[in-house]
Image 1 (cartoon, rainbow, N blue to C red):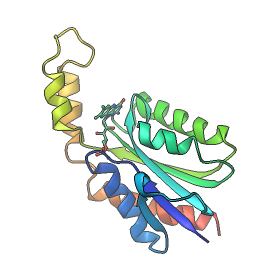
Image 2 (cartoon, rainbow, N blue to C red):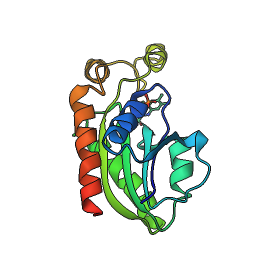
Image 3 (spheres, rainbow, N blue to C red):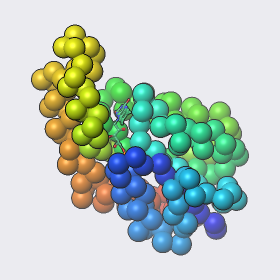
Length: 168
Ligand SMILES: Cc1cc2nc3c(=O)[nH]c(=O)nc-3n(C[C@H](O)[C@H](O)[C@H](O)COP(=O)(O)O)c2cc1C
């Protein structure tokens, strides 16, 4: 079985998750989306970072090109994993993959540290702006800082095994 693990990652969080998945599926090809040559695989793990409640543009563009495949997805996000926002991300990504008649075997996601440059920019916003620092937001950004951590990566490895068991 030909397996691809492919990802988009701006600051390295999603790449860490991709590498963890690969550790438990070493026979798979591990490629950043920019290096994919074709989609001639039996199973594709597609990963991205979250931008406006869905895959970032690179992962989104790729996901729209995957049709009639066995797929699994993964992502990292700044929001809490148990938030409504995370649920929206799952819905948006799964809808995208299902619309192309793909067979979704599962998904994995965890929090990922937010780019300090983005946080610095948030700090320049007027206090009534919806992304300006507030007590709640600052707490969430701080909580994201340590992710993905060892536990997140161990869960990504377990996810990899569960997907492989599901398609045996
Ligand atoms: C431009 C931009 C937009 C983002 N939008 C969201 C968002 O809508 N929701 C969210 O939870 N996180 C958002 N984030 C946070 C990233 O998804 C998160 O930090 C992710 O782990 C980055 O992954 P990477 O290191 O693989 O690039 C955004 C980050 C950037 C830079």
